Length: 288
Image (cartoon, rainbow, N blue to C red; front, side, top):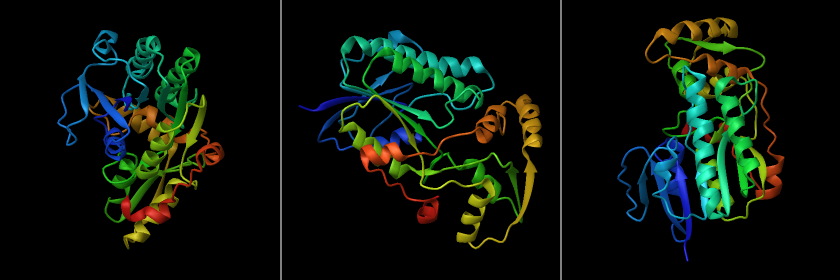
């Protein structure tokens, strides 16, 4: 009998890559999305709904595993983060708690803390809901995800592609631990095949980098001779607040907060439980 798995956020880049990586010989894959998607794999079951509306979950039958990827990553308003990340998780937990699911897998963030702005705080609140529910769970605090079509390095790419000069955010507090999407998907598939450990894991690359250091690795690979110009983080904060007048801001104040907040890159627990061995940016620079 196939294991029934429901994936939220299936329309996103991580969700799509993850679905492509799943061995459907073992799983019956269902997805909850806001609008209809034509999947190449005709065996995928689609449900149209909104996590913010618990009634839209009633169409979904009993599942064995929930992989909750959906969430709000950028917004001008704290309320939207609460609705999209906290309320949505609360609804999902509340509905499926009645079905005695075997494993609730939550894609969180390394920035899940009180000092990473509204996004980080909302993810932390969602984590607490899952833990308090007593459902069997695995929480994955994922670092910056990169790879083809991934959004994790969007800002970095824009900065590097600027002619001649590379203006980069400068602060000693900025520490990035990028992880490739293939490593994320491989890990998720391992977790799917294992019992819930009721643990919170840091999912990050093997190395930690400053912003300039990452820029140098990429520009060197492509043979670019850029002149690096540091931009104080305080100035970026000011710009982030003033550009909120735009319909679609270039950068949100919340992004600055999570960029400089203190985050763990300790993957020892993953190494112990899943023999996790992610590749470095240097090894995969051609895939950025």
